[in-house]
Amino acid sequence: MHGWPSPSSTRTTDLTATILCEAGFVPKPGVVDNAVYVDGYRVDSPPTLEQTYDLQKRRGGLAWIGLYRPSETMIQSVAQEFDLHYLMVEDAIAAHQRPKLERYGTTLFTVLRPARYLDDEEEVEFGELHVITGPGFVVTIRHAERPDLAWVRQRLEKHPGLLSQGPEAILYSIIDQVVDDYSPVVAGLENDIDEIEKQLFDGDPDVSQRIYLLMSEVMDFQRAVKPLVAMMDNLARGFEKYRVDIELQRNLRDVQDHVLRIVDQVDGFRTLLQNALSVDATLTAQRQSEETKRLTETSLEQGEQMKRVSSWAAILFAPSLIGGIYGMNFVHIPELDWRFGYPMALGMMLALAVILYTVFRRKGWL
Image (cartoon, rainbow, N blue to C red; front, side, top):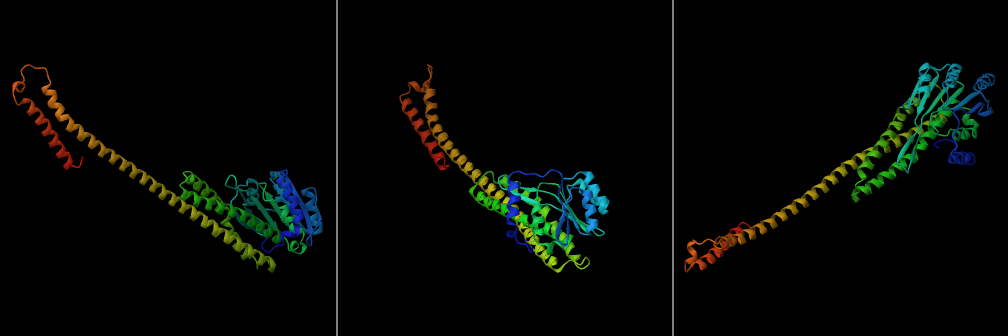
């Protein structure tokens, strides 16, 4: 993590979470993890929301309520307890929100779109995470199975000093985890683009469809990542007003740099794929042009052959015509009784053949 405790400090807990995920463990809708923290330490994990509210008021600590696909009743309960704005509540219930950061008085409503890359399908799978932070409370609402915020919670609980800095520390840590999870997505997309470049020049006929589908994934990923730039800027502008700890400010700037790098990479991916489409269109047109040229050359060659065949047919037809005329069984053919009739017929045959050969030769048909 950028600026946060090293993952090596929680290797055991992360391994447990990984095993659960690989085993197909999916939490039941409702309260996933519910805790109250005092001075950065977990003092209790109440089984119900009502007990959490009561304990948080009595101990004056920080309540972190983790919900997974909660019912409308649960969200309304949280909204009533922490006096949440009705627009925020509507968005939390409806889900399917774009990434955004909105402030309602002292309460901050953050929507994030976590992502992971499915290499076999060459698709980016998106989740949706709502983080509501206010004085003394954090409510996280997951509308998808990922990300598993247990990892973030476990890491923060290993460092009470960081957790004691309040809701801002939790929010920034969650954002950092979401942004870190974008790195494998970037790597997966980059690998696919490298494969597409090879396919392009190998003449793979399926490359056009692959480029189009991958561009669709890149555009979806771009819509999830790009709003983070403005969101991070808005958080940075509230540093002084909300007296954010200097270390948290540094951590946020580090995450902000990471976001900018990812946005630049994704923009580059989109440009590369657009160029790939242009190159594919050019190569396809070139191949079609070469095929048309080849067909034209074949057609011309066939035409030349037809000329030669037709020329010889004409040359042979002329003597056949004369022979056919004098071969008719008519009694009164003047030349039949003429002494020079036979030589004349042969001469005419030869003369016509020579004349036709000369004409066709001059025209280039022979």
